[in-house]
Amino acid sequence: MAAMSHSKDLFPVESVDALSAGALGFMPRLLVLTTLPHRRPTSHRFERVNGQHSLRMSSPRRIGLPYGSYPRLILIYLTTAAVRSKSREIELGRSPNDFARRLGLTPISGKRGTVYRLQDQLERLFTTRLNWRFSKDSSSHESGHGLIITGDTGLQFLRRVLPRKPATWRPKVVLSRAIFQGITRSSVPIDLRAVHQLKHSPLAIDIYIWLTHRMSYLRRPSLIPWKALQNQFGADYGRLSDFRRKFLLSLRLVLGIYDVARVSSRDQGLVLLRSPTHLPSISGQVPAGPPPYGFQPKDAVIDKSLD
Image (tube, rainbow, N blue to C red; front, side, top):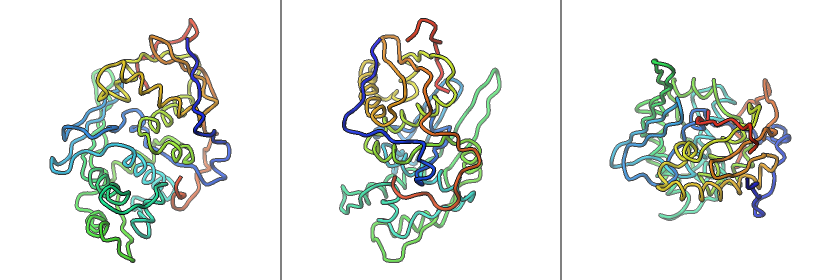
């Protein structure tokens, strides 16, 4: 069994200080169990399946589906704002550059710059229809549809002004009721400083959030087969061997930050050993206000679901 080494390019984050440092953020639990695409999809439809959980996404053909790091940073921002403010109405910032900084991005103009790519992913994300399904026994439950309410004027304003970068720019979006209820009832706490260090790798962001969530309730060693991990994190990577290689490279980045996580790789899959979660208990301690800126043992259980 190969123990995982840490990346030397990143530094560990002291998660016990996340709350006091104003670096406490949140990600919808459903998007931890069923993740967004990492690369540009070739279709306007996408599906992730993780055990009893599934995510289906569809978007207008001319716009396409959201992918990469930017939608994840946006969703973390929106979820953190909703949990902190307990409001469906979310302000995106004083200006496009301000919004980029809130996501931990350096504003750069031009077609390949930050603002243009941010605009593109915002439009993809806000026009995508999300449908989550939870199946148990013979019954199934659906939740969530569009991220924002249909015809939201804040989004139309955002589309109109983002390329021009006006001096007075205060767009807002209103989360749909189903999405708001889902994220405020069940979101995964994360350290925004860790996300900031991993922001260039959507796979590393997904692994970090999932790993700290999983460690929060892991009680005994667990072996997760590579195929189950591929279904959850990278069904679009093609061959299982390709996914495994990319997963382990991204995991090294995560362990450079979350260095107390005890994981190891073996031929059959990834072994998780009971470890401290990356965040302490935060029950009743969620601060109010807007989101902060930037930011295998032999008895291992064979676990085919990542829930």
